Image 1 (cartoon, one colour):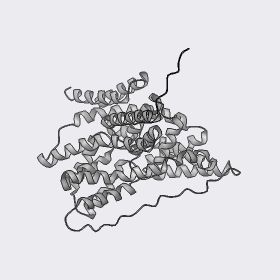
Image 2 (cartoon, rainbow, N blue to C red):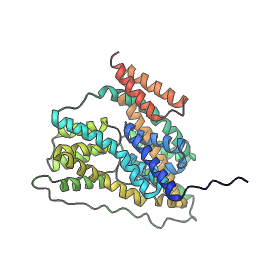
Image 3 (cartoon, one colour):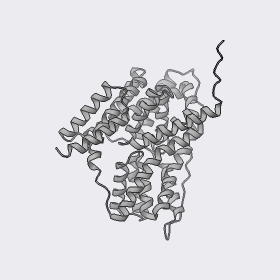
Image 4 (cartoon, one colour):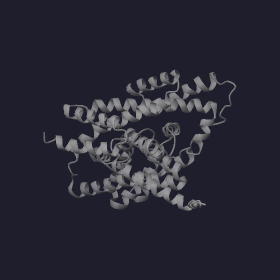
Length: 389
């Protein structure tokens, strides 16, 4: 008689899950170029399609919910995914693993900038990466869109969000507007006898007032970036306005040119564009300044996700909140579509860029098992090689 192989104890399985979380998000952190829409697209393929940590509906719910809280959306999605796989420890390890490669690479570039007044010429690689990631976003939009588009009403809401976004409406306003339409359309009109959600408790943000006179201490740096991280809605690119108002106009810690250089470096490096904080922190106070600014700007996201994650399944079970969440989900897909349109306008400026985009799209859709990471790497190499043509 064959004996049954004993299963591994829970602590062993949890350790394996935590190691897997670190590996997955460290890899994504190293190759996730191109902004939040690309990061979420890469996560969808890695977490939902390849590893099946959750179904596509729950992933969509998390994307939609993440758009409603402050902080960098894609970084917060890594935390949600880590929590789904390995609990609160997975949440923190996923976020740190995703942030760390960006912080380290940005820190190195900040050192070069401070020491030599310039950074390495990486524009040719970025030239190839940008059109390549369009294919990755398109793939995610189609997959997530199919799941989110449950009826024609949601199609109308998604279309309205796309039009509003293309007209310049703030993405947070678009997402919340979609949610309110969904709340009225599905929750109240179609489900008058359904159970109403008792309350959606708003997160009360602490406005950290600091007396910022005299030399810039690391504590002051930490508090300033903590405040920015706690109130930063939308994608990481909204960060420019926040930093300009706070650090250039308000405190006079940076010139506009220094801020533009910092933002450029944040876009050149993989991972979240909020790694710009690392660059600025190093400019102001060296190594420890970089640590203070980086930890300050990302800390609120960990706390917000820790509070939000357990609420998402409860929202899905409520008929009233479910309509709101469905509309938010289609709104999030609409925002991704609008971002892709703007990205195409900015990036597809010549025949070489079009060639990279078309080739990347063909590979992405014809060879579905190819990791988005290889699309990014291939785009970077093509961009570099085509500079010699």
